[in-house]
Image 1 (cartoon, rainbow, N blue to C red):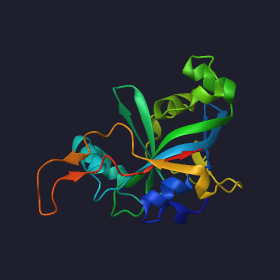
Image 2: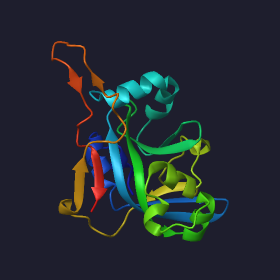
Image 3: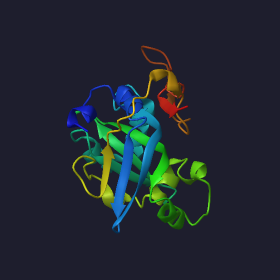
Length: 199
């Protein structure tokens, strides 16, 4: 992949374009990964989801304000890692959350890491599941996802047409609204259709 893919100023376009690309990790000498099948876009400006995220995690700004093409990884509930890909330039705090992959490499190792003997469909069908399966932790925060041997995005030769990608509101961002009436009225970013899923 070219760096220009990740420095695109339109994070929504990047999130949609990541559908069908490959995500891999090589942790402990074991290759694991698969096809990206679900993403969510988060825009640093004019997106209450990201604005409020940064208010709760101000230390994240240093990672997000870098040139696109690096991993931004944080934990929720103390244990679950969330993998995001930083996009745009260093003047913005845009990123794409990788929500789901279809496993293609190292399936048995992924099952071992997950501690379950589950189907391929349920192995990485959630952001915390996929990071556990790929051994992606905050130790990899800030790692480039280009020309890297630990974690990387790889371009697929498969063309995904728009008709095979659905868009819908993002999950778990009920806080992305502001009931205070300003010059432009109350804001509600919970319904923005910035979640993309491969049919």
